[in-house]
Length: 393
Image (cartoon, rainbow, N blue to C red; front, side, top):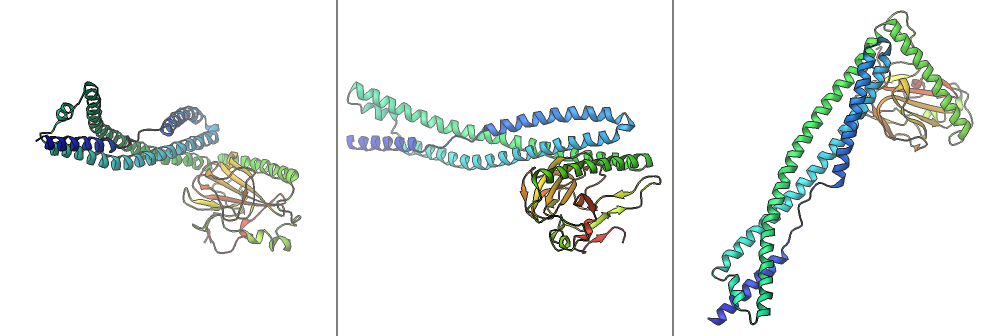
């Protein structure tokens, strides 16, 4: 009988030691990154409200239609940043749920194992361990040991509860984040349509159309000054001398002959270079580049190797990127919804530099492409392959 009790006591102690060894990491909870994202969302919301007040004020005055369009573009940019932040939150929450679900499975198995151990012990209890004490000091040591085991068993149950509570919290947060994302995307689509509508309304009158053309011409002169300043300060990109223009054989056989299309999605030309039919009589109809009809958010590629002169907001061009190439050549890509390069950065032909949008004086998503040779704007189609579809077909 004494031998049986010793064996049982030994088994109980062994189970206790194993139980202590089987610990599980705590549930993964919200980190500092999530707090940062929440702060970014709060700041974005404040910016959105501030811009909306300016938009409402600009809409009340007809002569501020272009200002309202620019403000709407800025608000849409902030809204897109908010959408990107929510997407990061969703990704983080989804990863946390996956990790905690795996953790919950391990914790539940540990809990079940603990219950089975309790059942297997039968009549052998913690008391049998205590009664085997050989001295008062030994008794205190055994009491501490039993208490530690009991606390561990309680922690197993508490950790399981904590994991399940965290999972419930995360799943609710994920649904809420998905709702915010859906609402924000719907709001962005409506805002883009509203911004485009302003330009369409302005283009419906000779006065409004002429105002846009005048401002675009002024923007073009300002941009050329910026390009000239760059070449004066930095010299020609990669050397190569100067070019005599589009009819110069060295130019046609050099950099310009190597220009690629800024998109591989489509080559549908929605507006050609030079003079064109104005939508209303009495307005100028000169177009300094070509427009390529491309879906919103499509990648835009650099037509040739070069150095970025400008990237970001650029007046009537909305979000644009300007690249300086060898031989006094530069390309401009306008009306983007986002840019992915920075000023001074060296880019390679075919590198993504931004995404298609409708910012600035634009009424729909497209790529506005301009090519300049020694300060003169030339027809980009003269330097791109002829595999394209013109709108006038």
